[in-house]
Length: 147
Image 1 (cartoon, one colour):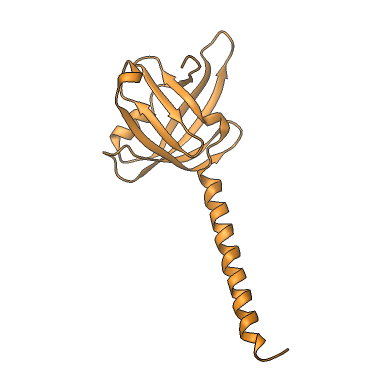
Image 2: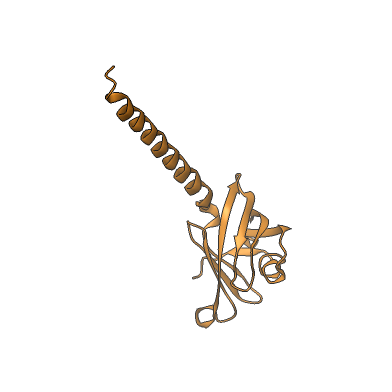
């Protein structure tokens, strides 16, 4: 091996290792922000009328009141989502008045053709923000197909 080529080869190997680390990190990061398909879409609460729209990258918009198309919106984000068949854990950041993130478990189930259809419920694991806890827990969100 030529002595002049050693530093070049070492630099090339180092550059390839750095590139591989970056690509692996980006792939791992993307894997934690992709929301499971069954969790995305429009969900709602009948009373008070509330609509939640969950995007595939974790962006969540929740209406503040009825009628939902004229109301203001809370903007939040789901992250660190783990998913098993129809349940898992996630972190929720936002709305603007809440600092930090809260950790919740989520669960989806089906209440038959004569029941209320698909239901989504969140259970608080850890969250210091009372507004976020009140927004996410309590009643179950139903799959919203009317809008």
